[in-house]
Image (cartoon, rainbow, N blue to C red; front, side):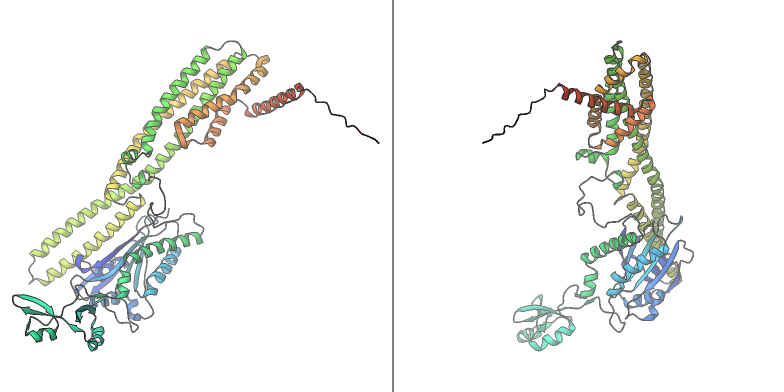
Length: 571
């Protein structure tokens, strides 16, 4: 089924990543990075379904070649910790085909990224087996573009200027205008043993010596308003919401029932405690006063045993007390039948629980195995990266070829780690888990479910055996009657039936609470009547006939009221 999964990351030199390497990885292509002179070759990587670059109108057309696009980005960013690109990983609905995935991605990327000035490089991956884990990687530029296709600034230096005792920040262009109004930059001057920022006019009047030529400025400068909006939490929330909306629209368009939602349970107003699959342990649920499924199974088995033991004693007592009188036989038969209906209801509930547990185990076990496999691969990759980093430190700077090869290996391993992290996160989302601790709880829950299945099988055998005993007892009592007594017995059983079935319903409601289902009780009743060879239609028709007879007798027994004669008075 369709799941919601969207993660946002930044491709940054600070963590050892390269925009060219990341793009080559997602597109399974071969690209050369002009910045560090490393060739990145991922052409042997499997699972690529589609790759494409989407550009805003004012971007250079040559950037449709992703190698040129990301080398232009690498060239613009100068610092060793530069943020090179923004990356989104999204899960694609398994219910859609390739053409529908493209329709969804084109619409989302165009409206949310390209239309506001970003260059987008995206690829669809559907690793083996196909349809198991389809997802898309979307890389986006982080700098806005000017109308002529040149890059805008991310942040601009902001000088803190003074005028009449007031301090205010100005960019270079703003200061040219502000300077005419009397605003001055502040510089560091030596005042005794201290360094104090002041304006040149104030310092010259007192004869202070300037320490350096750098004016006072804000620590981080003034961020480009467009970049500031793109980096804001509000924008990320909007993108998350828009992805859910775009996905739901295309699912609705192609008449697919599944829907996704980016909001948390609390935001959606869902107060129900999540099930085991959502990563909450049974003990925590129980402490909060909620019902955990596997704990409920254990409690129900104990309640079943107690109830069945009590009912068995009652039926045995009634059976022993049976005499040759019709009312006693009718009471025994109806009580046995009521007991069998109760047992059959438990069997149906047992069947439903068994099917539910098997479905959860069947769907979760492969995901857990794959999750463990990816965790092991991730652990190995991190160990390998650590060893390479250590080797890089020990390699002499006078061996540039070795340095380049080590850098290339490090970047490749870093991209592999990022991909494995994404795959691990997707598997966690498929089990509605948001942390490794919740995944451990899920693993424990699956183990407990297997134990619960064994208990349910034991309960099923016990209930089936009890049903067989009751059936034999019912037929034995009924066989003692002669044909002449059948009609009288039928009337007596009809009189008792409603009372017995009401008692059975009440007992089931006490055991199952708000999970009691009237439809299941009707199914259980029909199944028992079929097993006993009794026609429920005869009972219903006879009950209707009997009520009509009673109503007719009641009306006949009532005294007839005399009608008053009207008097006509004539003058």
